[in-house]
Image 1 (cartoon, rainbow, N blue to C red):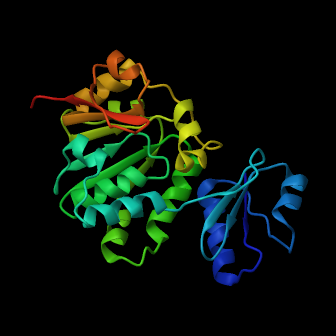
Image 2 (cartoon, helix red, strand yellow):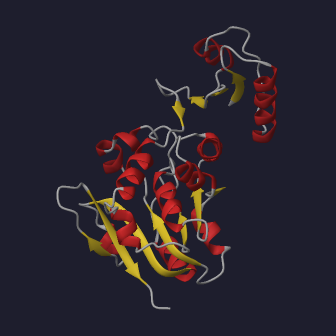
Length: 259
């Protein structure tokens, strides 16, 4: 991968792009009025484009760039503020002051909603296996302006780690998180969800394992949550009680833990 700037840039954003390249330990290549397609053809690399409004990742294998956008989370938060229920928050029984760990961060939509509910006295962390995706989402959460102070605060509070969720769970203390959440990137998800389809090129298709569930149950103090396709065998395989949702392709499974 290489880092470059948007078509129109200035000294400040040039310096920002150079610093991002250094942080990611990849080359910075000046744009010099070239198209992204021309740069990809020349260097045969994915391009991370640092613009004034957003950072975009142009992958060699994808037709469209990937960038952070919290649309799905914003719609859910607006419904919550109107007094409507959110299926994930109900399944997790999440309340202000609680801690929440998202082991499959993706675009962070679920973590944004969880952070809004957990509030300033709670804590929300996310684990993303793909370091490029983790970087883009982390920057997006810090920079995106939703025009709503509460929403912005919810995004800024989220802590992101890049790595394998099993290994990170192994490093954590027992009973140190109230709720642990899994939303694996399965094929059914990609086919059914427009929001997830944008991640198809970046997602690392990790299989949920017995080891991951074992570690989650050790680290978690209240509930382990699994979101999966309604046909999934994993609810039964790992011992989740299913919260079925009429007319929805996805259900939530819950393992309730005794303190």
